[in-house]
Image (tube, rainbow, N blue to C red; front, side):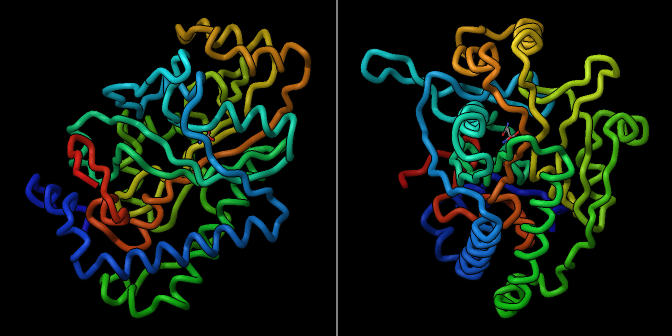
Length: 322
Ligand code: ASN
């Protein structure tokens, strides 16, 4: 499905009210409901707190440096005389909360990321989407792998069991239930095999989702300064659907975070809360991640464009009335 080229006219239709009349829309929304229900229930059964999201704050995820980032504009407004940013991810709120509040929780967190307009045609980008964010105190990468592997397997099982008719309408009757544990690849080895754009090439070669570890990016992910290895990861879906989860173990030491903030050319005054906590020894080590809800549902449904899973599509460059 993914191999067909997406035309601008298709995207315009998808983004308009006509998109809601498409016969695939209702089955997709039914499957999305089943996935959200299954994931929420699994996390609640495991004792995770359910936290609701925030949308405006002085600090948000810089999304920098990140090899995958392509933000055309950052949304900032003034409220009560203070400049605030629209949430790009709740990473800093997650780090503070996991240190001072519940030690494991999840959030369905809406993110606004104004992607470059040429990203409309990747089939994988949106300018508003939702992450299923998780953060766990004192956890390691493996603990986070297990949480998301369970959510993925159980929700695919539930969809196959309860939404057989919908999968048939979508031509997705053959959807595989992946085997666990998922394979783990090292980013450096993938670069040798596939070159810089390993993400999509690997994705096309996979039959089941697979983890990729050690990806240089934002300062908050843990970096082993001796080996230069990053204790972070992405989960790559098969069939060209690409990355669906990003996460990692986190930095928690004051001096090291300061060094990395400077190295990345970021303004330290944007990160005072988390730096202060670290300085006082109150920032707990943790690990966590976020799953792109629309991307995952899109994979299960076999969509051509991830916006098909949104009732009100947010396709880069196309702004509709609703
Ligand atoms: N949600 C991601 C994480 O937990 C961060 C991101 O979206 N950039 O690591």
